[in-house]
Amino acid sequence: MALDMDSENDPEEYTESGHKKTAAFDDMNLKPTLIRGVYAYGFERPSSIQQCAIMPILDGQDVIAQASYGAGKTATLVISILQKVKPDLKACQTLILAPSRELVMQTQEFIVAIGDFMNIRCGAYVGGVSVLDNEKALRDAPLVVVGTPGRLKDMIQRDILKAANIETLVLDEADEIIARGFADQIYDIFHLLSKPVQVLVTSTTMPQDLVEATGILMRKPRHIYITKKDFRLEGIKQFHVKVEKDECKLEAFLHLCASITTFQTITFCNTRKKTEWLKEKINVPNLPFSAMHRDMPAFERAEIMKQFRSGSTKLLIATELLARGIDVQQIPLVINYDLLANYEGYVHRVGRSGRFGRNGAVVNLVTSDDTCLISKIEDFYNTEIEETTLDNLKLYLMEQEWAKSKEISPRPARTAGPS
Image (spheres, rainbow, N blue to C red):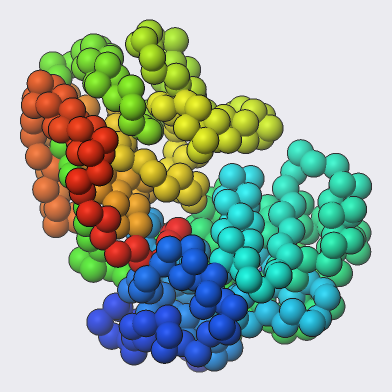
C-alpha cells in the first residue's frame, strides 16, 4: 500500500498551550445522561488532553491524541464516542482496536461505567474465546465494539460483525499495537469497512511505523500532544535506593516487602525469567502475591488481574505487559526491581502510582551502573528521584500506612482517566 505523502494530509500539531481548551465538562454540550455518568464515576474536571481533544473529535475531525501514560487518553476517546453514538441505531457504530486482552477488557468496563445512564451496550472480543461465543454475544447488538485486531478482522471477514454502520475507527495505544506486529490487521480492517470513517488514535510515542500508518488511514489529522515538559508526576514521590550490586537487590526488596503487607504494590522486572525467579524468592508472612508475564495463557493472566483488583493479592510482580493500559486505580506503591534504559518505559511504570490525583510512591532499586540512568531520567522529565536508605524508606511507608488508616490525607479533585 502506497503511503500518502500529500502535504494536505500532514497532521496539524498542537501542544497543550497551542490549542483551544474547553476547561469544563459542562461546556462541552454533552448529553445529560453522559454528563451524569462522568460525574457519577467521580470525575470533576477534564485533563489537559481532554480539554484539547474532545471538541475536535465531536466536530468530526480525525485526531491523534498523544500524551504520556496517565494523561487520560482513553477517557478522551470514551467520552467522545459515547457523545457521538446513536442509541436508537441498534448496530455497531464504533470499532476500538487495543493491543492486549487486558486493555480490551478494561476499556469495555470503562465504557459501560461511564455510559451507565445511557443504556449503552459494549462488546469485547479477544482471541482465546470461541468465535461461536463471540457470535452469540453480538446478538445483544452492541453499539461499541472493542477488541484485539486479529479477532476483529476475523469477525468482520466472516460477516459475524457487521461493518455497514461503523462510523468511527479507534486505535487505542496505537504505538503498542504497531509494536506488537498488528499493522497489517489494522490496514485490512480499514479496507473492510463499508464507508469512510472518522479515525481516532491515542499513543504515547509516535514511531515512524505509526507516522506512516496515520498517513494512510487518516484525513488531515489534528495532532494534539502533551509534551514531556507539560507532563507532571503530581502526587508521586520518587525514590531510589542504592545497592552494591545486582545480587543485593533481593535482600533490599525482601526488606521492603516486610513493610508493604497492607499496600497494593506492583513490582516491575525487565524479563519473564527475572519475574519467575523473584516470585520463587519471596517468603514474607501475610503478603499474598502473584506474578504475571506475557507468555502466560490469557485466561491465567485474567484470573491474576481479577485477584489483584479485588485486593486478594497485595503484591503483583510483572513485566512490561502491565506497564500500559491496565487500570488498577488504588496503587500507592510501584517498585522498579529493574530499571529500563527506555525513558518512556519509566513513565509507563510510574503511571501506575498516584493515579487520578491520589498520592503514590515509586521506589527504584539501583546499582552504581544505574546511577547515570537515574540522572538521565531526572533530566529528561525535569523531575527529582530522591536518594534514600532502606530504613528511611520503611519509615516513610509506615507513615503512609498510618495516614491511610486514619484517613487524614484529603483526596484531591479527580481528573478524567484512564490513559
